[in-house]
Length: 421
Image 1 (cartoon, rainbow, N blue to C red):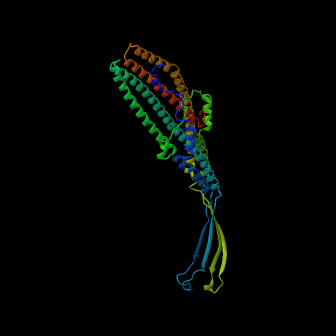
Image 2 (cartoon, rainbow, N blue to C red):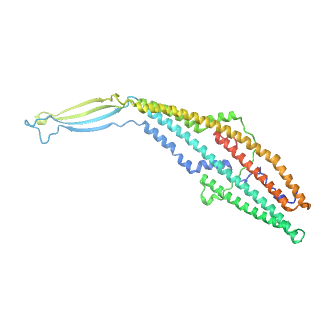
Image 3 (cartoon, rainbow, N blue to C red):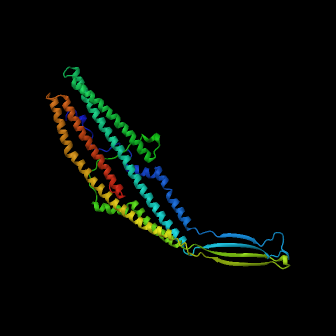
């Protein structure tokens, strides 16, 4: 093995972080338990249930009491008047057109839509978690690469400084290596800061206390060369069945139909049944006994002018609009799944080609440059240039691994189900 072996960067298929670190499944469970946005959104369901309760309530009866023909002073022959009358009335609304049942149907469908929207919010929050989690994994891997590169440069620098002290080499190689060492240290500092930044973002998503945020260590095997478990058409079929935003939109179509039924039943307002269980007529001014009686009556609206025509037309237009929106969303989901499936295959091929062809070729070029330098055929600058080119190829390989891991998780988000681990 060449003496500069420490310059080789760590294998990307080695899991990132300690074995006891936070796994992606652990992070998802924490998200579902602790994410503040999700905790707030969960109140939407009981509020929708309260709307169902409200929609099912009947209108309250009306109590009314009055006194009629009360004289200013008293009635007499010169100022005659009828008997003073005291009434107690109860008016009860009658929903003859079953508007309450229609309102209840609208509220129940709306509640189901809210539940589907909550599931879609969970899907999108998990997708955000995927991004934050892989950002931490990528930053951690970059820090490991940078530390490994710094270790190799420092080893070469130490060897060449010893040779310089023994006056076996010129100063130029040492100066070049010192410059590379400073660059490597800068890269380590930047990579370490990226780990801190991405870890804080992950802690915020998981609602982990700030004083504990930087103690998070994740565990994830970034590299995975497994192909998609099903064909593109099957992925689209799963997405059409499982995506909660599609379910919410379909429920929106159902609600629009329920709104039409409610608007049609609202053409006729409530009837009012009047029950007057007690009427007292004071006949004592005429020297007669007082009289007691009861009455009943019905008030019915006449839908001559207002038959709720505007709201009915609006509700029917809304049905067509929500159907179009559903068709648009279905097309969008199909294209999204097809696109991410294509991206998944491209990133998988890029990763495999990089590790099977590009990296080995770059390593051979670097090794040859090292041998020429060791044999005195060239100076160290050529070797450092070859090493720099090799590092670029390794960085590209690392980016390909991270991109493919993101694409794998994006497949899950696009399909709305855990297709890939």
